[in-house]
Picture 1 (cartoon, rainbow, N blue to C red):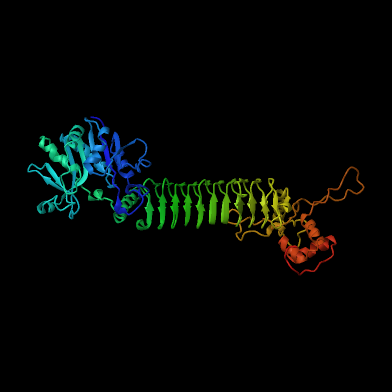
Picture 2 (cartoon, one colour; picture 1 turned 120 degrees about the vertical axis):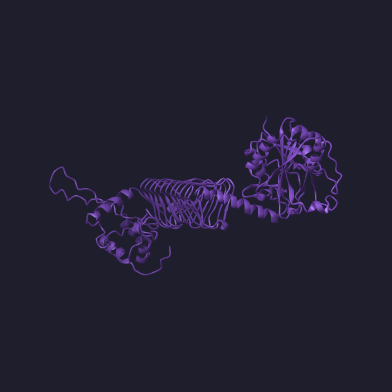
Length: 587
């Protein structure tokens, strides 16, 4: 036997919804109402799915590939709606008819109905259910042999007798027919009822008149019968559908701490041992791996989350989050964002259309847009990518192991090389070479100062201090080069801090302070030459600002050192002492 045809009646206007949106287009747990019976029909093995729509064809855009549309020109009843699909029904096929506003019907129920009908060799099989309150439903009238004689409608007072209204077995609106019997009977249905409509159940007595059998298939779960005609019923059906979704996930190994405070759309995938905390909403095509923690208070839309990640109080849409990633609290990941394994987007961080490398941390108060960031980079608090010039968006490229200090603005297009540093309060508008320190005073990009070789000098200085050898020029303040100022309050870049060794704006740390001391003079020995004195950027900067009339207090503030330190360095160089007090404002 050929695969059955499923006809879904969906042409009603749904005026009781009080909406400009067609009733079956309203969302139910992440997909339009009409898509629920379509999906059930496909899962039940339908060879053909036909949706009967109104002339406006408003459902055409959501029915999906492989679904055929039939048009009921006027709303003249369910038999007329099925007749509109007659050209798509084969005489040798089993035809299943269901209502589009009954979305909870299960694929297993439709499959069982088809099997029961095929085995019974009946011309028609009607799905019935016994209700404690059958108000509003058509009553099923049985023949003495237990087969179905007819269905009596109760929409209007003249259709059913009082005795018939006492019957509790009702018509669910689901049928299975032999194709040839259905097509024949539809031609003979008459609208001789109080509503003046063509009722599909009226084909049943027509079939019996031709000595064809009509059987009943009793529905076990009345929830499958729940119909949507208004928004109150939509909420009731949504609650049932949501409970079913939650139960399926929990039975598969997902912990939902408070199902009553959790929203999960149909189609969302969640791995074992993941915990969904209260007030979390998961929508669209969201996929979550195993051992993750989502929420409380998180919203994910079309997001992908890897194993072991934590998303706390965050909003994530169209983003890809890798394994062991930390997001939030109060973070916003926008479409196109990729968080690689082990990365972090912390408190009040917004990321858009950016690729954040493995192990990279953006701990707090930052906006990263249209950027590519390498591995194990740490962006200090309030790092901003200025990606829009008023006409176009531009890319920012940040290398691996980069450390930006607080209040760094990267004006795209710009590239920051591997192992580079930025000074606090800097506006970086020019490319920064690998291993360099870049900073600028104020907002003038032309004043940006770049100290090449800074990373290597810093490493040499650390080695010297670790060996107990004071770095040149730092005997009174060991380890307090200018790069220490402006760092985030966190101590270790490996955690959430901005780099603890990043320089403040305009700072020029002793790039070669860690270099070995110069050779002793060669004296009279032939062929030997003394090594040149290593540069002292800090002292050069002090001289430059002193010549410009800056006070010692202003210079100390800009370098991030004490006033005593400035005065000692000036004394070393023989620079006249300027007043230590005064305004710190820039000239």
